[in-house]
Image 1 (cartoon, rainbow, N blue to C red):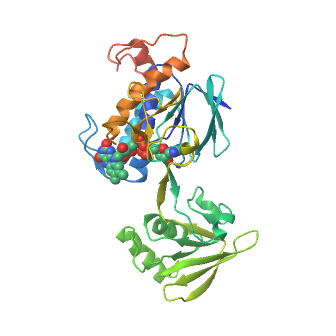
Image 2: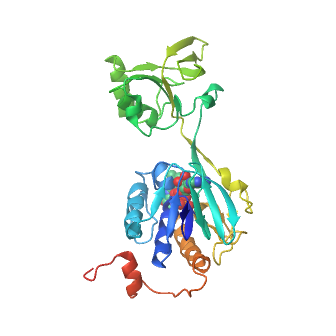
Image 3: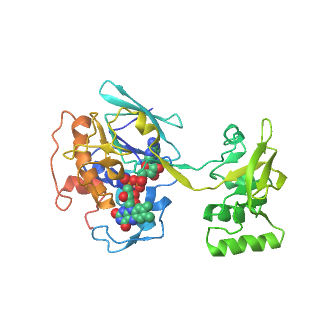
Length: 340
Ligand SMILES: Cc1cc2nc3c(=O)[nH]c(=O)nc-3n(C[C@H](O)[C@H](O)[C@H](O)COP(=O)(O)OP(=O)(O)OC[C@H]3O[C@@H](n4cnc5c(N)ncnc54)[C@H](O)[C@@H]3O)c2cc1C
């Protein structure tokens, strides 16, 4: 059980920056994200694309913005709990009890929801057997590539992830890359590399084929694939990997008794509190008249929500407004050395 001042749902740019705002005023935070990496949409959807409207940064990329934000919070030594979805919340005296998909429990007087457009979830196989074998032969992401060493692996998809993993795993596994079209959507040079490896017999490519069924009792033993013309083929395999992109789901947040407006959470713009005391929403997920789904708006929203968290985390203390330029306390919290 982890006790903290604030539990942050979402490690997108807004979730990271609010760690800074909380740290400045002396509050401790823990961050949970469903993804396997920090950065939200910036990292998942456009790591290499330029962003031109972050104040005082004429240009940065999704990745460099994330790295800079992490650099700015490093002195707070915040824990980021990745691959964990915040699942349930319940009230326990003056605290919230928060449970994740990985069964971690957090106790905190405040929750800041910075969940963007919801949690990113992989698009899954539609065949019924896929659910039974999920994480036991059927996978939608790779946490440890050595798991696939010397195994027979079937990879489905036509984008960058499918191509990159087919090329990578073909170094030490028996890989078949299967796609429903003849053309791949991923980077041209990756498609060329995959086709070259197929020519050299280092990997197999099957197009245009889709999955028809998965075979096996306690573990995956094979798959049946079907072409548009109705041709059927059986492939013996140990693992089936699906890389069909991600969908965004509001997911469990919809069950927490919060007022919702379509897929957003209405907030009071004085402090970004939702209809529940101690639960705040900032960034793309919150809504109010005039809301702009921009990173810079999320930063402002986080600054106000952080100050509001102070009241519940330190009920007997008075919050003092200070500037980082002149406050020794804030500079110490930031780890500024005297010579800086
Ligand atoms: C292609 C593209 C270009 C863009 N360009 C710009 C631009 O130039 N300038 C600009 O200002 N904005 C831009 N945006 C918008 C910007 O990316 C978003 O406004 C910003 O990412 C919102 O940040 P956030 O932290 O609120 O949410 P997100 O970045 O969406 O992060 C939310 C995180 O919360 C996690 N999460 C959700 N639910 C849960 C849960 N239950 N448990 C655990 N984790 C959860 C998600 O996995 C995700 O990682 C662009 C967006 C796109 C798609």
